[in-house]
Length: 68
Image 1 (cartoon, rainbow, N blue to C red):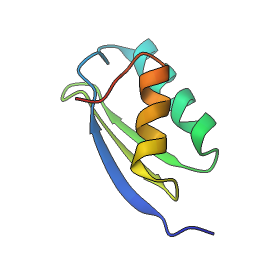
Image 2: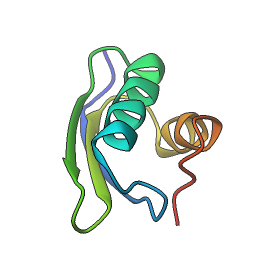
Image 3: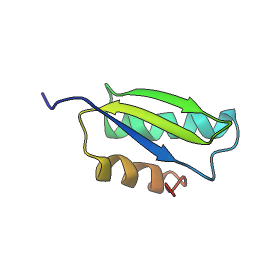
């Protein structure tokens, strides 16, 4: 299994609980076992995952929440 790393993204378009749910769902589709921490106030998401940053970023972009 790939080594888990913590990756943080700034998501300017994530503004509410519904957005947070969609972001979590997109990340879980890319890596079903990842752990997701969301801070709506700062519009950041921290992901603990074995996937690479590019794959997670692509999943977020496809869901409509492109990282800044």
